[in-house]
Image (cartoon, rainbow, N blue to C red; front, side):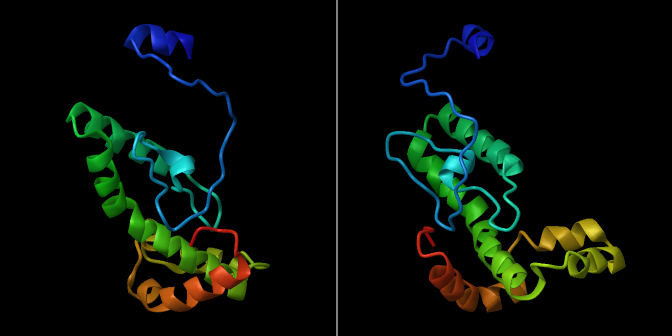
Length: 152
């Protein structure tokens, strides 16, 4: 961290050490004074907890917003466009997993194995496809009931 700060002339206002932050939302956590990225902004997969790709992507969007001189306002608008469909698909994915496949990975593995294009198939899970859009209202209702402490 010291090497990074020395090379880029950045000043830390309130340094805090932490080793991770799990947050599962379908709403982007916003702060008017700061740009929040990665897991702390809510960009974490509700099904399996993945978040590193979203952390990098949100960091890139944040840095571009800062370099463009638009900072928070622009960042949250772009982040909403990029992440909201994925956050909604996470709700549906978790719902389907809990209702139909939570004890049997073979259901998903067989679907991936039998797919003509496994990457395309997996990608559709995170892009709010047509079936997810149809299922979303039911999934959201179930998840709010099942997990009342989550910001859904």
